Length: 262
Image (cartoon, rainbow, N blue to C red; front, side, top):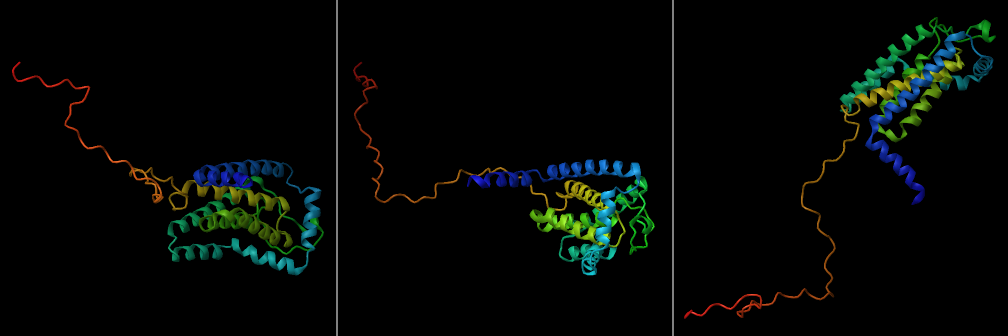
């Protein structure tokens, strides 16, 4: 079908050059993250839109907050270790090592970026609402969203690579929801955590995907005989003509043999 050609072309590119695609996505996320960090770090104060949006999230019903809090625990150390152990038990040892390494790099990455940007967390005085958090570290980017995005993208990429982007986005959104309803982060902190998670997951899969047995390899060229035609012969067709029997008469192109008396 003509409508399926673009999708098939995308699938061929993704399957033929997965490392290249991951690096391109990681580079795009890194560029956006750098621009966002510069913008946030210049003022260290939320925009009016961020302030209004955070107030809206803090006022959400407790049921919505509970969902966000439940998903938020994906970024905790016990959840990461549980995923790694489960992959080891399932025989996915190399994949488990990649997941653990990516999450460790994500932890270091967001701590470094928090101290570089030094953005204060929301306060009761700024938001005008009681906030449910007791964290005194810097805000940008959200560490929970960074870890949750990295864990979801890398893990699902080994299991169901086609849906990994959607799963990563969904986990990041729900984790960010939990952090915002608690008043622990500004909205741009959540966006920054998602971008950092995408960057780390993309680089990790590009560098270690082949080693972990995920990146497909190109098939080796065939050296066997050409494939025979599997179609059976047509019984109604005329049989091939037989070769004529050999003749004792000399051919016209051959000279006659000389006489014995010569």
